Image (cartoon, rainbow, N blue to C red; front, side, top):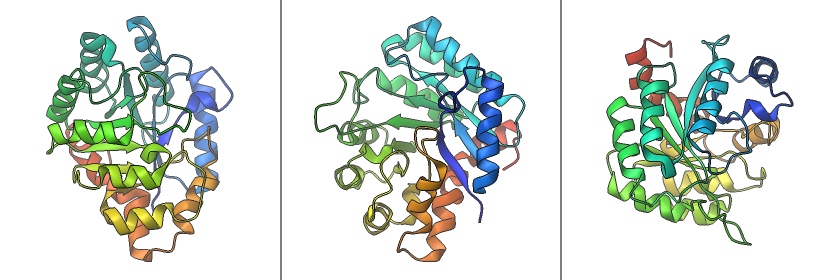
Length: 261
C-alpha cells in the first residue's frame, strides 16, 4: 500500500548539509517502502527563532527539497512571536514557492490570538497546518502547546483542517482533547510504538482523522510503521492512515501547484 510520511526532519539524519541529509532520508524511505515525505525544520536548535533564523530554516528545507520533487513536500517553519515575518514566509515559501504546508513548533502556545492570521492565510492557500503538541509530566516549555490548546484554536476555525502533531505524546489524553473538533486530525509520530495508540484513535476518531508520521530521524521509520502495520484495526483502515488521509488533505494545494499526487 502507499505510505506518505507526514513527519520527517532531515537535519536529524547526521548531516548539516541539506542535500546529503535528504539523500539519507530518501535512502531510508526506499528501504521502508515510504513513497513521499513531508519535511520541516532546518535544525532543532531554535525554539524561538528570530526572523533571520526563521528564513535560514526554510532556506535549508528549500535546498533539501530541490533534488527530490517527486518524493518530498516541504513545510515552512513559522514563529507567531514574529507574526509579520511568519506571514511573509508563508507568501515566500508557499504562495510563491514550492512548499505546501506550515510547521508550528514551541515558540508560542497555539491558543494565542497571533495564530489566527496564520490559520486564515493558510486556509486561503489550502496549505496544510501542522502544530506540534506535547504533554510533559515535568511541564511543557514556555511556548509549547498541548492538544487542549490546539482544540481552542481549532474551535475558532472550525472549517480549517489542522493536524495535532504527536497527539500530545500522551496520546490517551490527546485523542480525547481533540475528539470533538472534527477539523482536527492526529499525527501518530514520535511517541513510543506502544500497543493501543492506533486502536484507541480508530475507536474515538474514526480512520479518516488519523495520519501516519514517523518523526524520523528522531525515531526510526520501522518502529513507527509498526504502529499501523501491527494495529488491531480493520485492514481497510490502514491505507487511509498510511497515505490517503494526508493525500486528501493536501490535494487542493497540490492540484493548484500542478504537483503530481
